[in-house]
Image (cartoon, rainbow, N blue to C red; front, side, top):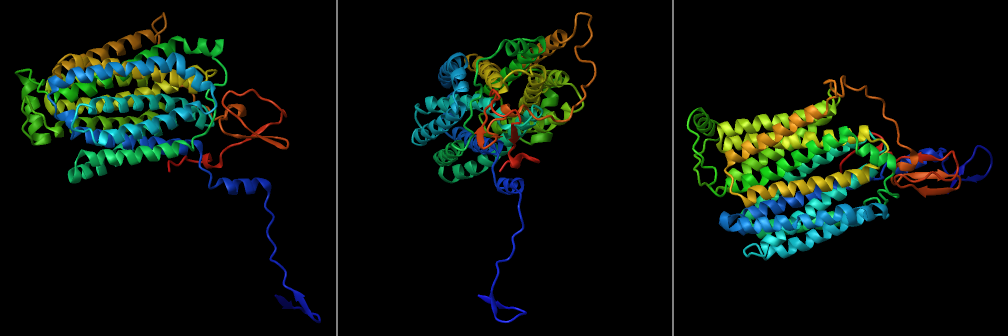
Length: 506
């Protein structure tokens, strides 16, 4: 095409001038559509949580919960005992090797997701025979293994130490939301076609998680073995005390889960506590729930209400803990979590029945969630030289072991609900007292007196940011956590543009 000029003749039509774009601007524009490592992990986590919820819905309507509780105890106890073996191997043997291998924890998440698909497929046609028990507990083992791998990956997705607690709280919140989102359609499908349809939907969720896991960053969590400084920091009194208290919290949730699973199916909540406690409990039943409860009731509704209260408590703790951490010490937050469970469990002993279990379940979910986030923050604060990926995976393995061991108690022994609540109150109260005494100095003053001043966020050492692009002259390298600086001393890091503001989950 041509255009008419002011002079004689015709001139070629010139292309419109394009504004000059700097290299930095171009990089930013390209990064606007880049998905951050945390968002990728959040997608895997949401799909996994939804799949677990779908499996739970299917089990509630299958042989797993319709079999005689007394006949099921030895099977549940056997399979719970078998779940200890994988964690006994993961912690001292497999875990360190996976941490040092590039993409080791990513490969673990992919493998677990694929195995979940396989177990769920096998479960579809075995919901009415005893093969369901090993399949269900196989999925439980995989769920706990995923938790260990996730604990190692989260620190590789942050840009500063201060982000760790926030990211963990958002994953906990996402887990509850995704669980509700997965349970609703699974329950609807189960009403239409039976438990098999719920498991089929879980197969799709786990398959999607497997695909999403292939997009996780392929980094080494800990390129080198732990140094003397890291070991010394992790053995400090504050971290050891906090780990012990958090272990008790994790044991409490494992104990409570199987306590209510049997107590509200097998008719063990039958202790006659005459007097004000029973009267108040009956009144709360009528006013709050409007249903008549029998001593030997096996209604799935009762169990669902208690489990739902625990999930709501967990979500509440995930929302409140980061905000409370801004105004009170992590130690006080952890101590408060233990005291809340102890006080509420004593209330449950007094009131009894479904209403007491609902209140206890809510408190247990809230306390365990808030306490775990407080522990993460204590480790982050008191062990600045530790590799957090390796550290959190190690602690998470121990916590999962405590969950399983504590869950065995109400499975092996037939414990009435009220007695179980008293045991919970005693364990939480004793742990709170021990933590309070242990966290004080020899002269009786608290180790921490005033809330610490919150410093502005400082970026991590560029060589510790997993998956960041490190520009050294004409060469672009990908750094892993705790890597040794090499090359030009002016090395700079270009962080993921998607992490510039509030991280999005999807």
